Length: 358
Image (cartoon, rainbow, N blue to C red; front, side):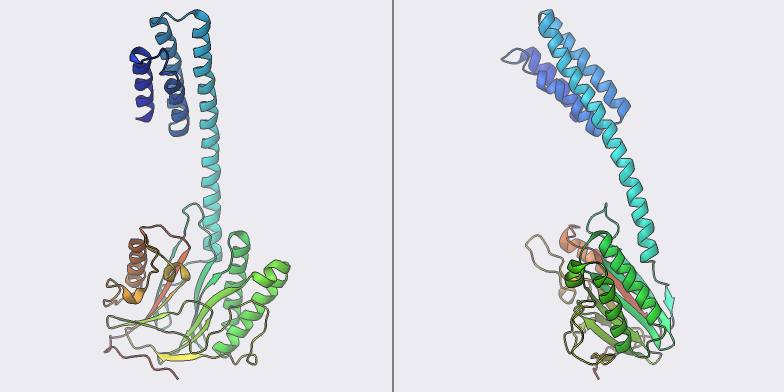
């Protein structure tokens, strides 16, 4: 449409404009627009049409041969450049598509979807990137059944790019390994902290001092006891009976991998314990949710959302509702990657109760 408008406007200005040849710039612009927006074959047709129209207008206005040749040369040269741009954009599009396919494969390898059922829990997860072209981010999650109960992690690596992907790989790998053998959640956190600190130290002095990972680690036992350790991450939520309860940590702690050591002895990090009733869900998010803003700059708060104040019987519905609610809040203008992990304890729903810490 823009190409046709440029050609028509160029013809009309040349024929009826207050000055001779006023429409020549529009005739020259039409091939450029076509080169950027249309296929190569269509752009080639537009270039040819623009050249023919330029010659025809010059003949109709009785323009001398030399200026006529100059007009044709200008339109033709711009047309050749437009075709070159078209080829370049096509090549870049193919390279981008290949890069996105590779990125998606890496994403699936580093951060595979969790199983839909783990032990007594039903599991769902969602990942939304801030940029459609970049399918790899620094958010991470994992769920694993262990001899000590179902353990899970959600976290956010500081930074972007391949360094963040490497840190995600280290965090997920360390979690998978240590979750099977660490006797307590506090010990698991300590070992993850050491693994992340070692990885950061081997990446250079900048990464060693600035590379860290915020995370929440959780453990659900068969009797419904929910243990939580929060290392500088947005708090999770208990969803039950149409109510959301934010599970703030009793004692704030530093992120993983800072290499500063713990203020408490190894394996004795503070652990908060609450009750996860039958039919209740644990909702874990990254700061892409809690730091999402609307057009006025107001932060999103799940506790203030009417759409989240309803009963959810399946974790997939909970994840989907939260993702859509954040999208509505931001107008689908995401400033950061957003990861959501929800687990629901199987069984009949019980009356909503306030979580009790121990």
